[in-house]
Amino acid sequence: MKAIILTAPGGVENFQLADVVTPEPDVDEVRIRVVAAGFNPADYKMRQTLSREDVPAVLGGEVAGVIDAVGARVNEFRVGDAVCAYLPVKRGGYAEAVCTHAAFVAQKPEAMSFTTAAGIPLAGLTAVACVGAGMVRAGMPVFIAGGSGGVGSFATEIARVTGGDPVITTAGTNPA
Image (cartoon, rainbow, N blue to C red; front, side, top):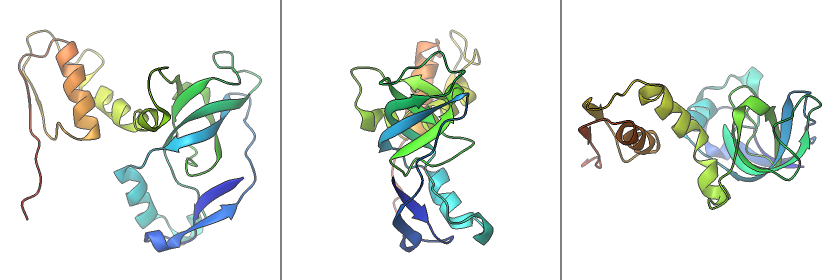
């Protein structure tokens, strides 16, 4: 399969298209044929800070695509399912296929494009960690810095639907 590999830490000049072995899922994993991959500040920082011992590497921490293989102990997904996934343990989203533990995979909403779905996992999970899981109660004022970004837009909606009142946010550009 094809993948974009990072051949050395640093800039985009260190990315290279290469042929790599198609991964096989472990018993608790699914293999996803990647339709779209997300790009986040975490990917940029990882590209800049990986050690020479960690390359070559395939980066990419979130994807959307179609499952084409499932491990023996995976019961919640089937071949052909359209999904999005967070890749916290094994990166590898900048490839034609990637394997990840089924716990990090979710069904893609039917009405949502693969491109949109690929941008949900990291920003959505970060927002849930910040304002989800019962942290916001009805009538509680909530302030969200950077409400127009990926995490901020999810956090704003979570705070709103869980009863935050008022929900106050900032957004803007750097005037420099």
